[in-house]
Length: 223
Image 1: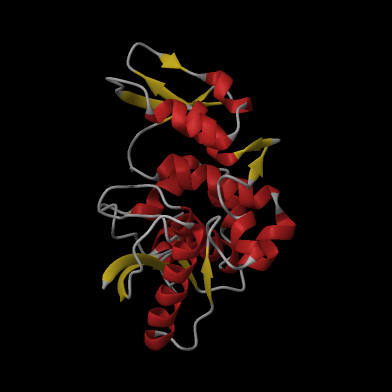
Image 2: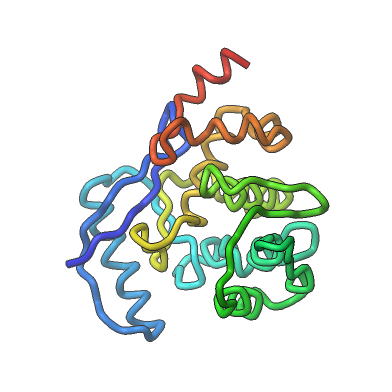
């Protein structure tokens, strides 16, 4: 058995992080990854039989889930993963903007292989973004990308729970499944346009604790 973090859209919060136990199939081949997705879905359906679940990754059996991967989803004509990697600014004001036009896998590999890298902020289209809250920049870019891709996002809003079989919550921070949950919540509560046009407002999604998002209805009333 293994455990995986999944992200559920809540009535009053943009996402709820839930740990699910499932039967793990070892191996790195695509067939093993897909078996793990199937097993994870089985465990989720046992606990939440009425919820619609979507795997958001290249390993998804659903074509929508594959299109929602940051390696497939585009914003401003560029792959989202390439935007994310090329926006990283390191100590000494070093930024590899040429990665914007690279394949997502190449851009990610290049940044991963950098030595002694210290990330100081993100910069995209001349605007700087802070490192805190930790998943702010990734989620903000992802939600904005979904807003641009209305044909894809119009299908996304029919789901309640999002998974990413590649995401290890003990080692990683950013997760496209979390970003999807945030988008669905904002869309269903008519908050989307206001939040994607106000970074300070978007920050309030995460609350004082990065793992405990605020009640956005209370924030909405306070403006």
